[in-house]
Amino acid sequence: MSTQSSGPAIETVGLVKTFGETRAVDGVDLTVPAGTVYGVLGPNGAGKTTTVKMLATLLRPDGGEARVFGHDVVREADEVRGRVSLTGQYASVDEDLTGTENLVLLARLLGHRKPAARTRAAQLLEAFGLTEAAGKQVKHYSGGMRRRIDIAASILSTPDLLFLDEPTTGLDPRSRNQVWDIVRAVVAQGTTVLLTTQYLDEADQLASRIAVIDRGKVIAEGTKGELKASVGAGSVHLRLRDADRRPLAADLLRRALDAQVQTEPDPVALTARLTTAASDDTAAEQAARALNELARAGITVDNFSLGQPSLDEVFLALTGHDTQQPQSGSDNAHDPKDEVAA
Ligand SMILES: Nc1ncnc2c1ncn2[C@@H]1O[C@H](COP(=O)(O)OP(=O)(O)OP(=O)(O)O)[C@@H](O)[C@H]1O
Ligand SMILES: [Mg+2]
Image (cartoon, rainbow, N blue to C red; front, side, top):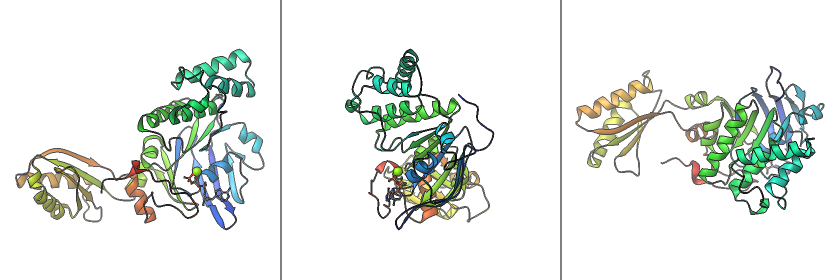
């Protein structure tokens, strides 16, 4: 692993890319600290892939500046290429080759001698749970296996910066978890990861900071905590002993907390959305008050939790539309995974 300079891994100022009338990236400012996972979260057509391609020197910006480890992506493209690796949304191993053949070939292209290339390929296949599939042609891999070999291919030589463009789109939950573990392992080795995703829970799981982009613009940026805090105080989730008491409990919570109360499909469950504006009390104080009221009314609470707002709520509050709303000029892949119970 090469040492990284102390500055940010990525810095962009006013980055722009237009395609005809479409301003795909419309003045994006980003600062990505080295050694972390940075999440770029946005719906279809937000400009995520276009941004990544400019940073990886695959597309030339039409305006603004971008530096990767201090190197300008246009004027010093070679230096940038030497330090980054990209796992694209539509990635790039050879389908007709086996897992081993792909990795050995790519390792050879990176300058490894044959024995070293074989060793590295075997290590990665093992680390990614692909040893059994190593001798199979990639075209026979499942979606999850395919995504894992794509990532393996992009970290053959440990890059200083890895772009992962929607690494888990379309994967089942188990495969997503495997990819998440891989991302964590890559970062633990010192690589900076820029991850684009449409999945709020994915950004929440992996990223230390998140930029939310919508229609080519950054509409919010910060740590997860900061983004969530900008939206509201959070929610109190309750499960009652007795379903019959739920209407009364909902009523009490509404009055005690001035909160929006939702009943869940589970007949004993309730969620109260806390509003920061209502009082100066912290979420915990409000929750304590709620429990008190319920106890006084003789309503037994079996289970109780206090949650921060979900990133779905953050997105809705920031954009006025939810993450599933398709953008014009893009396909409208709808994934139910991120829906919140309403
Ligand atoms: N080569 C191109 N020619 C014309 N328009 C393009 C091109 N590439 C992207 N666009 C448009 O630019 C906008 C941003 O696209 P981009 O692929 O960056 O979005 P994205 O955030 O990666 O979306 P997705 O989540 O669907 O991958 C979209 O409106 C898209 O249609
Ligand atoms: Mg994309």
